[in-house]
Image (tube, rainbow, N blue to C red):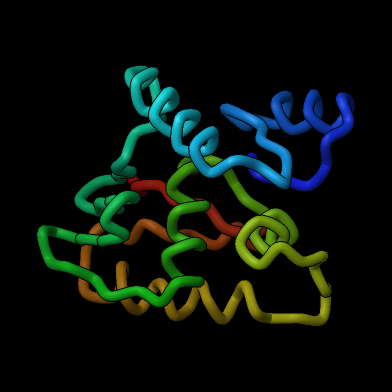
Length: 148
């Protein structure tokens, strides 16, 4: 985490929320690079670089998506939405959770932005493929899973 918040409680909160490291501004670029090298050396046990469900693959580092070995072109927001759903596969995600995570905004109950993006995502990753992976849970939200 790189931030201007340098109080002890800010550092504790950042690390408790999942940051691997915490560096306050202003900072020395050499120190920043050394911290990056240390994180890379730590390696192992890190997050997977690929998320999968059925024949859908999302490569995080290269920002590529494939369905049945066919590359799928996604916009930045579609990619972020798909990543969020895949990280939470088999969990029902509410529109509020999706909106807050993908768009970083409080959910406006009158907005259909989440539904619109789900529709666009379905056209790209579900329309011409089987099984369907994005499912609507009426009155609640969406879930990514293989239906049996």
